[in-house]
Amino acid sequence: MSAASCVIFYGLRYEISSFEIEKLEARSDERVANARKVGLNSYWGNFGAPGERYLLLMGAQIAILGPENQAEVQISDSEFEAIVGSVRAKLAAAGFQGSPQLHIQWQGDA
Image (cartoon, rainbow, N blue to C red; front, side, top):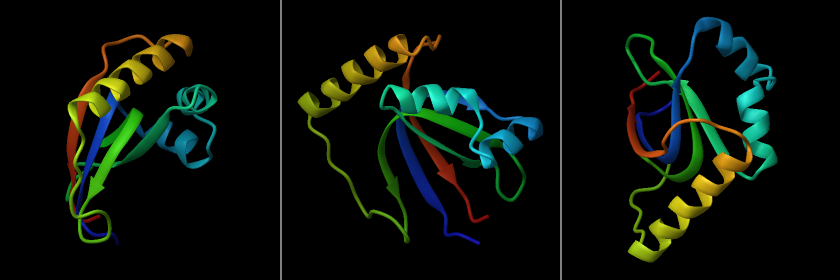
């Protein structure tokens, strides 16, 4: 079990099927491999506790807040603008489609 946390990412978010979980666990998911090649972060997990809703976040990890992680984070306008520009360029370089967004996801106790 892990403690609840709030995951903050700028980038793309994908709903994950049970079939895709196996690939993520085996580190063979093509999206994650392509993201890693261009220097993007990824994070996946169950965000539906106590039920199941698996998500994959890909882009820049801004923070993970919670009892077992950071307590706070501050990002200036210029830092955030740099993150946005970098993520957009790297997603395009890796051939990803979609509009990156700021994702703030609650991840309950699993």
